[in-house]
Length: 99
Image (tube, rainbow, N blue to C red; front, side, top):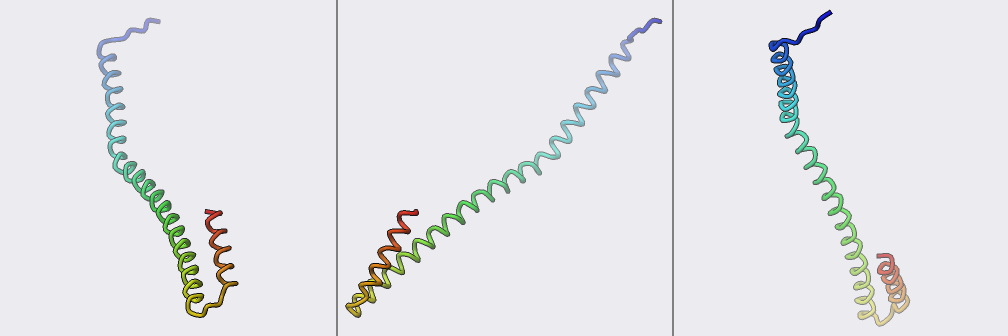
């Protein structure tokens, strides 16, 4: 049993390999914009979550500062409220320590 490979078979095989490679490149290029968009959306989501966390920290800090200022204003007006000032000081210390 003799098996011979002709030049036509070699050319056909090379053409088939080239066709498969071409199809792979076409599919890869067709998926590229979708993959890039998906990666960009993931990046924006991470940045948005980070910014949201930072804004929540800023809001908490502002609330603490405003609460302390209110206690100081009340103390200046009434001359009393030393207990509230001590409570506000303790809350501020706890906040700064935890931060």
